[in-house]
Image 1 (cartoon, one colour):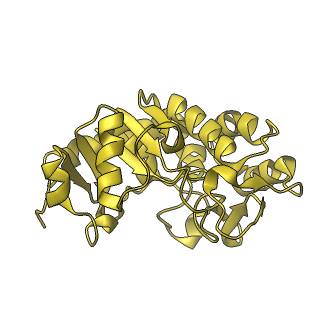
Image 2: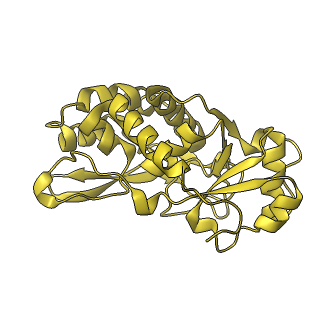
Length: 244
C-alpha cells in the first residue's frame, strides 16, 4: 500500500498512521511550495493555547518544494526551546525531543531535506517499515494529469493499493485509477482522531496537532500502539473505490 503527500513538517497523527499502514510513502517534492501550508510549519499546544512553529524559508514565485531553501534566520535552538517550554511538564518530553532535535539541528539548507530527515527519524521511532521515496527521483511520473501521475507513482513504487485521505474524494478519479490496476482505500482519519492525555488539560483536548504533542504525552511507543490499535479497528470497516 502507498500513501502520497507533500513532505510535511512535524506531521499530524494522520500522516503518522500512514507510516504504519503503508509499505511506501511517496513524497511530492516536485510540486509547488504552498505558503501557509504544512510543509514548513505545524501546531503545538502551549500554556497560552495553540501556537505555530515555523521554519522560515526563502520564497520565490512558483518555486517547487525541492527548490525551497531554509532561510538563514531559522534558529533550531529557539524552536527546540519553544517545544521544550510548551511540553516541559509532559512525561515523555525528553524522549520526544531526542528524536526530532538532531534533524532540526543538522544544518539542512533545503526544506525537503529537513522534512525527510524528520520523517525518517519519526518513522523509526514509531517502528514503521515504510520506504520513503521522493517523486522527483522517480522516472516517468511527471508531465501528465493528476490521476495519471498518481497511477505512475504507484507503478514506479511497485504498489497497487493507494491509501487516500478522505479529503481527496472530491477529485480523485477512482475509475481511471482502477483502469490502471490501482485500488483506492479511503482513510477517514479526521473523524476518528484518538484522544490521549494531552498537555494543558484545562484548555480541553485539541486534535490535529503535530505528532510531537502526542509523543511528549505518551511517548513514541505509546503513539505507535495507539495508531496501530486505531488502524486495526478501522481496517475492518474501511471503504474502497467509490464507496461512500
